[in-house]
Length: 397
Image 1: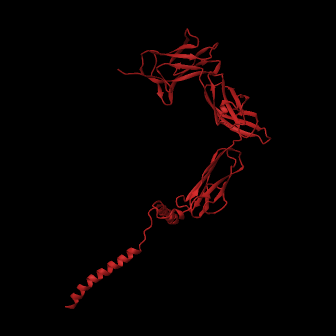
Image 2: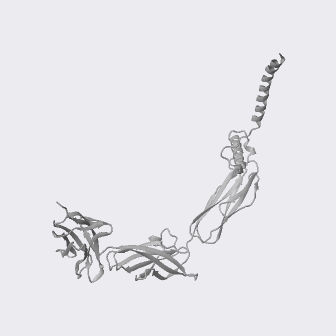
């Protein structure tokens, strides 16, 4: 009879003990902040402590006469234009307008080329100190911005960021590319480039060459005054304009590279700049018709053998005075092509005809298409052509 009674009493006691043990374990469990890696836990805890301290200050729980107050009237400085590979420096002033000592520490700078030197690390109330930022500009001509971070004991301004910036003067500025303009075959393709220096008081263009072996390049240099409107925001010390021209004997697009050799006036070694150029020469002959597609030419479709078909194309010739313009070639040969001048100089009428006696002919396959070429037989470059796509088929009754 005792056994059931003992079990009845023991069950509640066991449950109470288990709850107590579980409660004890729950009191010792410490959860990590979500998303904060272990190696940044200390930084996270410092941030929480700072926020808590700031809240106390804002709610008046900490007397203001117990606080340091960091004051920085100037947090950034612009050097403006600065020479390359020099060390520039600027001194900032930090003061303590609080009632308690202010501790300061340089936490780091944005790059190795910048150094922050702090005069005093502890400021008594009313005292000031300086921090000097030294910056090595390097050789690259561009706009720079460097920073230094200062850690303070001011609970309302735990970090102070100081910044210096400036633009390094360019040795020589030249465009990356230039467009040359030529209207017709045989015309001069012309263009111009401007070169200027933010360092040299003068320089000389020694040579300008092209990588096109069959092109004749002409160039001419004209000095530009530093007060010229083109140089208004360039901070130039010397500048020139180089006029470029070269004859173009073939229609279509062209491109190449100009290489300019420049000699500085200060006796330093010559400098080389490469400039890409592009252009387009219109063909001397153009074909005009609503039947013509820009890329695919003339589509005549599928024609029935035994029927006659005719098409007329307007032809315009530029710079063709004194030339004999004719049909140079045609495919397929069953296509009859003739050209006649109109009453207006430079304008012609091209007539294409397929006769009734034309046999079955296929010229609409990728590897088998027709074309018509028009031009001056004495000058192979003075010509143009367009595709002709279609077929002549026989239909059985």
